[in-house]
Image (tube, rainbow, N blue to C red; front, side):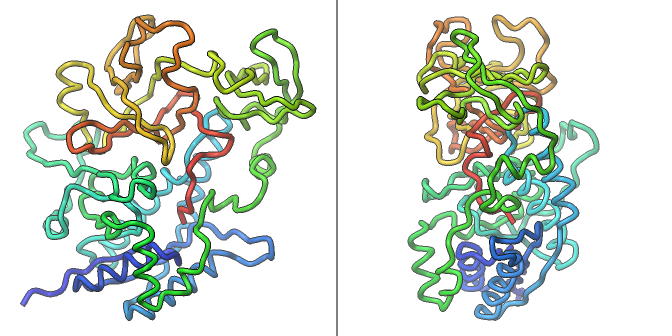
Length: 420
């Protein structure tokens, strides 16, 4: 008789990870719950919320009668996530720490711990997502060490695992998983991928998990909590006072504490002005933030987006893009944004004189950048790191991180969810 498959499930003290562990147990797997301590924030009462979440996660494991483990990745989180967060802001870009946390902490540190230290056959999380593999196919995956360098053996036969959207389109969290490497993805189970949030709550209520069911859903960035975002950033980065300038007449409208605090497309709260103004450009050298009135102002839109090196979830670009240098896709630059149809293009595009970065792509409207009319509302100036394109075939997700590009979203990273 074959021994039960061992699945190590990340438990955060929330309802989603609790139900994920429960469903794995029901499938007959040997389940171990692991709580990751990534940050030790204090709430407004001086209580460490990580301690409270850990206690809730431990209680979940007691109710489910599964082993509980606790690991600390505070150092790794600081080095790989928080430092990156500050560095990106200082460069004037708007990072998404949840995407980086999943890439480096959950699907590298936790994944390696589960496989190497606990002997896991697979790992699992409470994300609302799916892959192209059934459970048994996940267990059949073997560890394949990636070759050093950019390219793998061209004679190697390897079927890439696809990251697919969850059945619950509103709760779908594939945006936050857009940087997960193949090695981890092919050995990960997402038990909630076919379920709705309401049904997950129903399962929790029927299985004595009321203590996590009653908790408020964690939103926002875990290391900021309920604190003022601008004040938090200025605890770590030196203020650089500058001016808000109207893009229409170069009139000075007000002052700010740092151009890096603002994101393209964000509403700029300018003291003394009733009407809303929105960020169009940032001049790091002068410290000026250029703003425009109205959300439909032509200066807030572009027809072309240029990226740095692309992160393909399948590790290689789609065959159509390689063959034709161009392909249609669906695109979103923030969590829960409606997908829009766009065109991916490799190489240089009309109007671009410099050579594109190695591995870069361009994203533009179907009309193409050379046919665009001034003021055409194609790409609003808001894409942030972690933006992704969604191809047609089975709608697998392909994504990139815009290295070297002024990304966007509102002032703080958009669609943030508790990643710890």
